[in-house]
Length: 116
Image 1 (cartoon, rainbow, N blue to C red):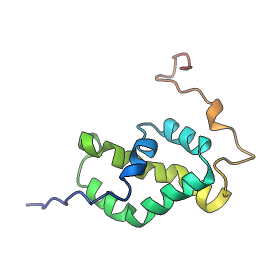
Image 2: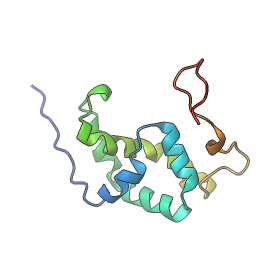
Image 3: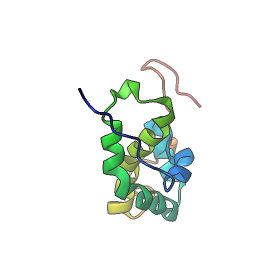
Image 4: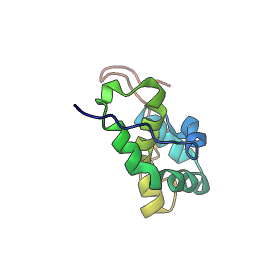
């Protein structure tokens, strides 16, 4: 019989969830590109010490069965992947020599016209 892990207390990171707990990778990348380094760093500094326990908690669910109430938390954990290079390598929200993510239009399917 497996024991479930209780949801970590997240009052310290809850203020970041509406802004960073976005449902798609594209939305999270655009959020990073449109944010200041101070905003990105504040999010990173709040999440990083808690990331291991958040992932441990979320790992008890199959990805498709993460409770709806925990989706913003799961998406914020994924957003850490989107901000890591900005914080630890580039020291900038975007890579100056890279493509501007804000120019990429998201498509639902391969043959769809891009969403505007």
